[in-house]
Image (cartoon, rainbow, N blue to C red):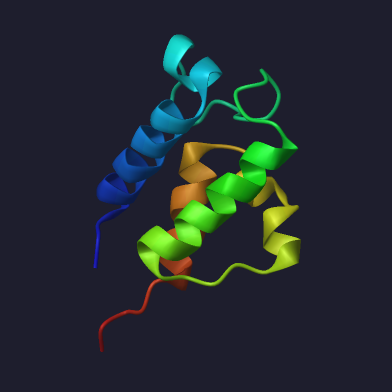
Length: 87
């Protein structure tokens, strides 16, 4: 099971690879991904697909539309909650 830091690193890497504004703009794990235009609504769908496939989690529509998609921190928390505990 990946650590929270590894989840954050994987999300950041995906954002920087997929979205030019994320590559060009400096942003922290707590910065809003939506407000400065780093990703748009289609980007949210791409990000949701990445999270589900890469981490093997299932996200609900409500989670996709919530503040959980606001920052890398909130995304990492969401993914960590969905990961199996291994026990």
